[in-house]
Figure 1 (cartoon, one colour):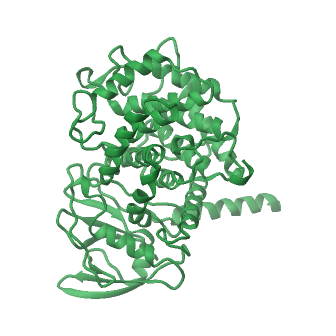
Figure 2 (cartoon, one colour; figure 1 turned 90 degrees about the vertical axis):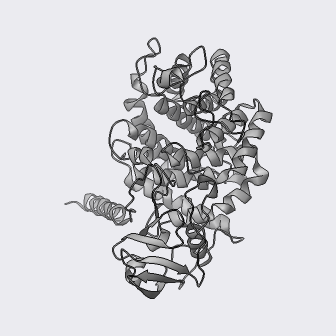
Figure 3 (tube, one colour; figure 1 turned 180 degrees about the vertical axis):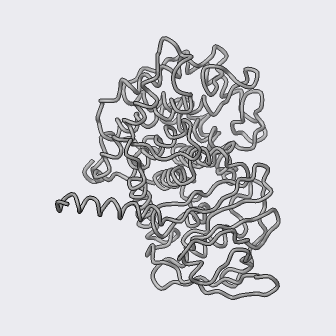
Length: 479
C-alpha cells in the first residue's frame, strides 16, 4: 500500500476508534416523569433520579472510565458529594437543575485541573462505601472562574471536532430512528461548526449543506405546497443556510434559502396557523413552535436579501400572539392551548426572530422577562429538550443581555454533566419525555444542543445577537 494511502487509512481508523470510545449514557425515556436519566459528565456513567430523591442511582458505568476505575458500580446510590448531602430532586419543571444534579455538576466544575479527585459516598446494599474518584485531565479551568471563557471555547472546540469525526460521508449526522430526522439534526450540527469558527471545518459545513439540499430542499415545488419537506426541516434548513451566508458571504445557496422561506409562506393559513406539513393538525389548531421557527428563518433570510412576505408574517404573528399564556407571559402550545408548561422553544425562538428582524421589540422583551423568570423550564420543549435549550439561550442572549451571564451561571452544572473527557458532549435531556430527541439521535443532537448553548456566548451567529457579516475564519480584531 502506498505511504499516503496507508497514512489516510490509519488516520481513518484513529477517528473511528475515537468516536467509538466516546461514552454514550444509557438513557431510558420516561414520558410521564417517573424517573429522569442523565449523564454524570467526565465520570462516564449514567444516573437516575425520581421525585424526592437525594441520592443518584447508578444505571450504567462506562468501561475504563473514571467511575469504573474508582469502583463505582451499577446499583450504587450516590448519597453524599464532597461531604455534602444533596437537596431533594423534584420532577417539577420550574426547579431546573436544583438538587443532586446541581451539587454534582458544581463539584465537578470546582475540581477543574490536573490531579483532581472527587469524594463521594455511595450506598451499596446496606453498606456505605467511600470512593475517591480520580478525574481525567480534561480542562484546566472552571466554568465559574475568571478564565471560564477559555473553558467554554475549549469545550465548544471539542464538540466541533467530535461532530467532524462523526459526520457521515454523505454529509449527514446519524439520526436516532431513521426517517427524515437526519436533515433537522444536520442543520443544527452544521450551525455548531459555523459558530466554532474553524476554517478547517468548512468542507464539513459544505458537505452538510449539500446533504440538506439533496435530501430536503430539492423536493420543494413552490407551485405545490402540498409537496416537499416538513416544516420542521424547511425552517431549520432556512436558519442554517442564512447563517452560512451571513458568516461566509457565500451567496451560492441563496436560491435554496429562498425556496425554503417561500414554502413556509405558502403553508401559513389565512388564520395564521401552521402544522408539521401542509395540513393543520389538532382540528386546525396548529403548532406554534412551527410558526416560531418559520419567523426565525424569514428574519435571518431577510439579512441575506430575502424579501419577507408581510401578509404571511402578519397572519402567523397574529396566531403567535394569541398563544400567549396570561399566567406565565410566555408562548403556549397554540392559541387553543396557551397553558402548555414547556415554553422555552416557542418563547425563545420567537424572541430571537423578533430581535433579528428588529420588530416588536417591546413584545420580545416581555417574552424574555418570562423566559428568565422560568428559565428552569428550558430543557422542556414537548419531547425535544434540544430546541428548548437552543432557542431558550438564543432568546435570552438577543433580548436580555444584562441577564445572560446570570442564566449561564445557573446552567453551569448542566454543561459540566454533559461534558465528556474523550470528545464532545453527552445528551442531557429533560425530566419527562425526550422521545423527540431520541428520534433525532441522542449523540448527534446532544452535541448540537450543548454546542449551541456554548456558542450563544460568542456573538457570531445572528441568532445569538451577532451583527457582523463575513466573520467566518476571521478573528474579532480583524473584523
